[in-house]
Amino acid sequence: MSRNPRHHSPASDTEAASAEAEPVLRFAGVSLRYGRGEEVLRDVSFTLPAGSFHFLTGASGAGKSSLLKLIYRAERPSRGLITLFGQDLSVLPRRQLPLLRRRIGVVFQDFRLIDHLSAFDNAALPLRLAGRKPKAWRDDVAELLAWVGLGAKLHAMPPTLSGGEKQRLAIARAVIGQPDILLADEPTGNVDHDMALRILRLFVELNRQGTTVLIASHDQDLVARSGLSELRLDQGRLVRAEAAP
Amino acid sequence: MSDASAAFLKGWKPGPLMPRGDARDGGLAFVIAVLCFFACLAALGALAADRAAGGWTAQLQDSATVLVRPQGGETADAAAARAAEALADVQGVSEARALEKDKVAALLEPWLGKEALTDDLPMPRLVALQLDPTHPASAAALDKALKGAGVDATVDDHSLWIKDIVRAGVWARAAALAVFVLTALAAAAVIAFAARAVLASRLQIVEVLHVAGARDGYIAGLLARRFAAMAFAAGLGGALLAAGLGAALRLAGGGGGLTPVLPVAWIDLAALAPCPVLAAAVAAWSARGAAMRLLKAMG
Image (cartoon, rainbow over all chains, first blue to last red; front, side):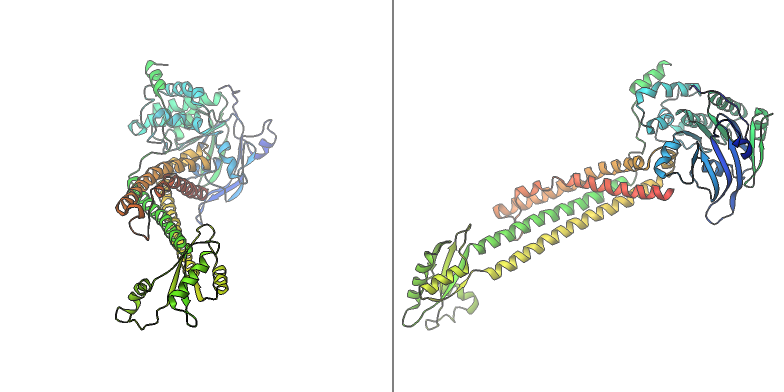
């Protein structure tokens, strides 16, 4: 990984327009409703500069997971515009989605590890799907797993791993392809405080290497102690877009 | 890197992205094998029907019958002999033979009964013709030769029967082909249903693959290969079973097959060889189609 570490705070649309670089992500008046239900996101607007690190906070049901799904286009907005890496996600042809998604790392709240694959195969998944030859990445995957403390569990199947180990494996899978943006949904939700801090340090390290990071978390204490920027959702509305002090 | 990690990497092989086995696989494989068995039987039936129809047509095409009516004071035997002599010289006739009264009576007996065949019954006289199989004489040429010899006779070249038999053969082949196509479609439908069920039960894996950047075609290909491999094995089983039955029919019936209606030949069994490949192709096509539709519906 050799990226220029840059730290930015979340910016309003106006600020983004004057930013030096094209923002990695832009939401403009985005709303989302599932079927005919109520809107789970309402008129959300923000931009994320490249290399920035943000927490996405809010109570359970505030719309954090839905917002992340919009970014990796598991869902489409019912209104508004989303651009990622300069591409309008609403009109992006389906055939171009895989290439876009290979630039995104996603840590699911429930990990979504593939139970019949070893920890090594789970972590290597994005590289296999990108069509890279195993010789080029075998050692890298083993090193990354060692770095997240799973060096002795390369062969282990996910059901045999503890919650914290699964969490770290899910993170390893999300970052192995050196994504341009990392989305993590409650990555510290199932681990103890020490593990939460350890995972946070891992994200900070990734961010230092240039990855834009957006972490959804309801752990206000962790967010406050991290001193990092915060986007706060309340009942689907973005009520706070605050830079780190 | 630790020794354990190095050892792991040395023996590592990529795991299958879709689980190889499923509890439903055994039942599905059995259904595909049964469908392939029926499809193979239909194929064997089509070949045998084709051969039977061809044989009957050839037999009828190779022969003709002439009904001779004596004129004036000429005896029936003399008229038949004269007709046979005239017909023997026609191009495309291999042999012309006037049938004796006894043989004609034997031909009529099943229709009239023995008691009706009295001496005073006016018995028709027949001339049996063997025609050149490659260039048989036409009915018109035979008629012309008879008229030239001044013989009053009617030529029956069996064309009426040949048409019926050819028609029956076409229908038999079409029916067998229809059964074959229907079983193939049934297999495709079953596999498509199973593919959708597998995808539905593996939605989480599919979603992970999607989000990690897998193309729809890649995911569908994983399923297509899985079902193709299963269908190949099931198709092989079904084809072998059908071949065994075909061989048994051939052995039981000798050179002519079990019955003249379905004369199975050894060479027919070779026609079953493509069955596993066809089953695999149908399975791959069906599973891929079902997967692609489901993936598109997922958005």
